[in-house]
Image (cartoon, rainbow, N blue to C red; front, side, top):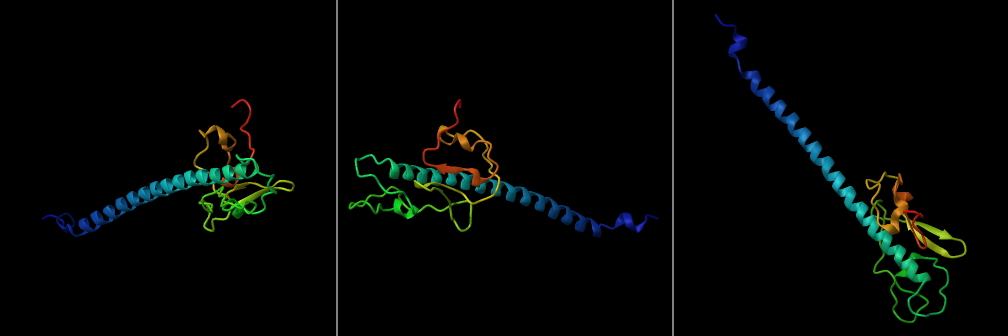
Length: 162
């Protein structure tokens, strides 16, 4: 006579379903991690673009292409949207860009007491994914450990010997 445990298959289905649930959970976690990294990379690229746009606009403020009288120090980033010193509709920046790395979108404004605003930086303390292979203009970003260390400053020179 055979023992009943070997003839019974009632627990097998339950164990198979539990194994399937565990496998699905692992796969969903891996997919979620990949999605998070993809979104983080996209926000990083957007930060580089927006910061670069603001940096270029600040440079245009201090070094206009056409000969106009010397502009006063830049005191507000909104002045880049429409130059208050010009009678024409001069726009140095297309629109007001927000910091993509933070929920509130506020930039840390970098100022010089004599010049006014000279740049911006993210307020995020997160660690960047991108650590190297920056364009020449942004070589100073290499090896930085926080997004807030990525400073988009007018007149910022790349390190010598790069």
